[in-house]
Image (cartoon, rainbow, N blue to C red; front, side, top):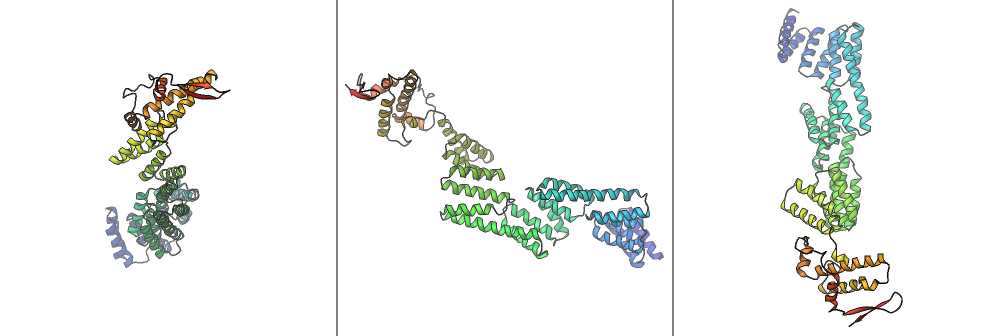
Length: 470
């Protein structure tokens, strides 16, 4: 007994000096010498708590109160260990036992409140997880972990929610900390897999899910995630194969099915939307392609490929302002020569779209030949000539005169190879000294039809005209 007391005193001295490892060794010697002393187990429990070894500390604290049920500090330590490990209900029972033994014990009163707080955070987190309010769950778990720093369950729930929020490095860090202490922890293995799965590293993720299921064959979340990961990988690969083979209809169906597998997998779904957008652009369903790319960038704002695909669709549908906006975003992110050229092209097309469309005015294609341009001018000039509408209302006359002038303007530019080239390249014609406000459409008309008085409009009945050439 004396020897055991001596070991205890030495343990106390090391504990006071915060040398907890040596204190642990001497308390162990005291226990080995006298295994039925409650205070020796109590002291070693306190030392283990200081070393952060709460599970071992719990065993010692429980042994101390088995040996002496009236040992107040033993019950307090047991309660503290339960609380640190996240078992707030068991902790509450221990603190209530302390208050039965000493109803004025302020530490037990405070710890009982702490245990109630942890239980409350657990309940809130459970409800919020069902509501998919993962930020709130992380907040609740952070608060609970202040009282229960050794609770793996709280850490895992926090890590899972961080993964669902896309905060993968933080989630990985929490899971890795647990695996360092317990390499067979199925929950931590599941979370590691989940992070990889959400980062679109599906093959590696499956390996972690399988490892988790080896440790805990009934792990429902790991089982579901493993199934989803395999299904997603297979559907995506099948879709890619169909696309490469030019079977766009099948590729569309496979990508759509893949998108229905797991709405939480943001990164993979962003790629699937972009892939489906590419399929839609091949099928010339450009508005649907734009919608798919928009969904892709909503899920992943950094997804350059989706911005480029959408910008091209905007160009193809002549929505140049939107195309410029997307190319600007791409160029700000990746300042390459290619992206700079794409932006420049879109800016030129935007500028061109805000000018008069001379091809549209003449009713010809942008690749129209010289003869087609002449024929189109002949037809439109005669159609809108003011003499033809001399009997119409003042309003109609004004509108037709405007159209006649525009037709002449269009022909002046498109019939001259140099002017046409400048116009096609998006250059400002007025900057090149071509002031369209100054030219006379009648002169263009006369020059085209040959000489002054080369023709006249004659009425051949109400509303009918024929052309008489001199």
